[in-house]
Image 1 (tube, rainbow, N blue to C red):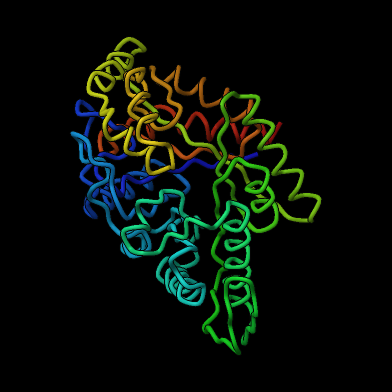
Image 2 (image 1 turned 180 degrees about the vertical axis):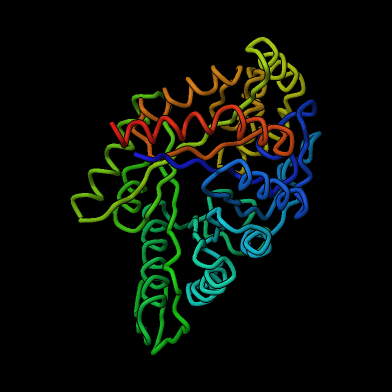
Length: 354
């Protein structure tokens, strides 16, 4: 099986490291465009950008400056030729009719490389500032809303007229033409049973996480099996930060340097926005370690060590691919593309021909 590898673009300043001593991508279009071109040159399969409407302060002003995902990815679609272009849309703030047409537009700009990462919004602060946060909506209702939203979008991509009298959305003889030339890939993230159910029914790709390798494998297997039972395919991915250098020791030195400046204030604000009481978030900072600067699992080591670890994760968790994060995309992507990715590709080819 050919595994897929892509990058999570740093659309917000600071990228995915919350530290004063880490490289600090500025979140600009030029930075992200360059990272996307380097990803394509390295042989990556996709580039994805999140959607973020408010940052988390702290000494790094983490994600205090960010761009809009769909607009930015339209520009990156023009700047690239081969990588898939996955943009993020919030179902809770974008009407499905508007979103459907925006992604038809992205489909044309990208010549069939568009992907829609659907999120429901989990950071209350982002939407309270707009007056768009419904604190009374349960998680179950939020999942129903996203499901209905996705049904509306996908029908608009296929049908000339859509009428929908739903719990959350009402469409009356609604038209959205042209339809996509290539139906955009639907992506979603989630680890709960409800999230995995949505992925199996609605998504082409699922981003998963787990506290242990076994947890991640169980989640991946569950999505694969549920989708297969419905006659569908849903690929599974996880996120991994890659800190690579010539030797393991040099890579660990990079990790130690990043850990020195961990911005616990920004991390506490992030937890408050998730819904954690302020006193608990403040208490958590007393036990925070430098490794908390990393927002995802990470591997630190030489090219050999990184190659081995990626194999362990992908095979051990039965994943279809990984979305990678780098401390310094401009410096680290070419090195990964030269020293690691070709070996992963060759390994996949050998497995197919065996």
